[in-house]
Amino acid sequence: MQQRSSVGELAEQLKRELDRYSPGGKLPSSRVLVDRFRVSPVTVSRALAQLAAEGLVVTRPGAGAFRAAPRAATAPVGDTSWQELALSADGAGDLVPRTVDASGVVVSLAAPPPGVIEFNGGYLHPSLQPERAMAAALSRAGRRPGAWGRPPMEGLEELREWFARSIGGGITAAGVQITAGGQSALTTALRALAPPGAPVLVESPTYPGMLAIARAAGLRPVPVPVDADGVRPSLLADAFRATGARVFVCQPLFQNPTGAVLAPERRGEVLRIARAAGAFVVEDDFVRRLVHEDAGPLPSPLAADDPDGVVVHVCSLTKVTSPSFRLCALAAHGPVLERLRAIQVVDTFFVPRPLQEAALELVGSPAWPRHLRAVSAELKARRDTMTAALRRELPELALPHIPSGGYHLWLRLPDGTDEAALASAALRAGVAITPGRPYFSAEPPAAHVRLSFAAVAGAGEITEGVRRLRTACEEVLG
Image (cartoon, rainbow, N blue to C red):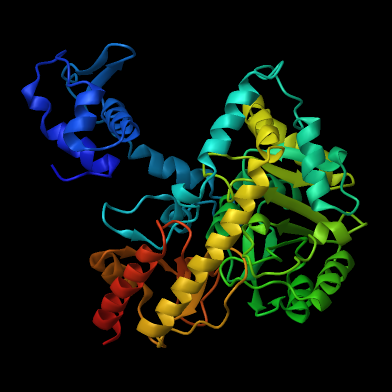
C-alpha cells in the first residue's frame, strides 16, 4: 500500500474500518498497523490518540487499542437564547463594547484542511522546532529537586535572571515576571495600564491579537501609522495630544506585519514623546530570536535604553520553540511592576514549575545555540525562496520591504482587490493566506495579504504555494 505520512489520513482510514470490530473488540497492534500502512510508530500512536480523543477507541497501556462502546444518546439541546440579552445588558454601560472578535487570531492558530499549504501559520513548522532538545530538557527538568513543587509567584529566579540578561540595560531579575506566553503578558499589561473605555495607541497595521486584547478589555485602539522605519514619531506625538492616551503598544523589531525595524534616530524620540505624555510604551519583542542569517547586529530592546520606567517589555520563548512552549517574560521597573504582578497572580497564580525548569534546561544546553543558528539560516533561505517565487509568478503584488527577521512577508494588492474573495479563491486552489484587513484598527489604506514561510515543510511547499496563489489571483484579479 502507498505510504501515508498524515496522521489525519491514517485516523480517517482506521475510522472507516471500525465497523469490523464489535464494541470492546481489539484493533490490530501498533506493529501490524506500522507494517500495513508503512508509517512510523509515532504516526500510528498519534492517529490512535486522535480516535481516542473522539471517543471512538479506548487505549490501554500494554494491552492495545479497543473499539469504544457506543455513545449514550445525545442530551436534549437547551435554550440558551437568554444569554444574548444577559451579555448585552452586562455591557450596556461600557464606553467601549467588550465583544471579542478572535477571527484575526484564529486564522493563524487553526490548522488548514489536509492538502492545503499553510501560508497563514504563526509558528515554526515541526521540522524547525527543537523537539528533541525540548523533550530532553523536559525529561531532565522533571528530575530536578523540587521540580513539581510550587514555584515563586514571580517565577524561578534563575529564569528571571536569564531573561534580564537577554534584555539588558537596567533590567534585573527583580524586574521580571514569568508569564504563560506573550499573549498572556500583553493582556496583563493592558489591564494594568489602561482602564476600560480608555484609548490605547497601536501601530497601524498591527498584530490582530493585540487589537483583540484591547477590545476585549473595553479599550479603544487608536492607529498610529508605520512606515519602513517603524512608527512615525510626529504622528505618535499628535495621537498622544489628541487622545490623552497613556499607553502605546509597539513592536520595534521586525514589526508584525510589515517587518519594519524602528530606525535608530526614532528610538529615543519615541521614548521622549511617551515620557512627555506621561505614558507607558509596551514593547512586544516577539521575534528577536527569529533573526535571519543576513541580519547583522540587532538593536537592543527599547527597555535597555529606558532608565525612567517608561517601557513595559514583553519577550517570549514560544515563537522560536513550539506553540505549546508557552513561556514569557514581562519586565518593568518602578511602581507599575507591583500592579503587573498582582494582575498576573490573580489571573493564573503562576506558570507551572516543570515548564520553567524545562526552559532553564533548554536555554542552558549546547543544543540551544545550535537551534538558533539552524533556524536563522533556514528562515533566510525560506524568505529568499518565497521572495523569488513571488517576483517570478506574481510581479503585480507589491513587496515594499523584505525583512531580515521574523517569519512572513507583507504584500500590497492591486487597488480594488477584494481580500476576502482572494483568500477564498486561494483556499480553493489549495493555499491558506491571511487577509490584511484584521491588521488595521480603522479603515485600511489599501488591500494587503500576509504570507508566512515558517509553518510550511520547506522550499518545495513555498514554491508550490505561490504557484497556487497565482491561480487564485488569476481568478480574482483577471
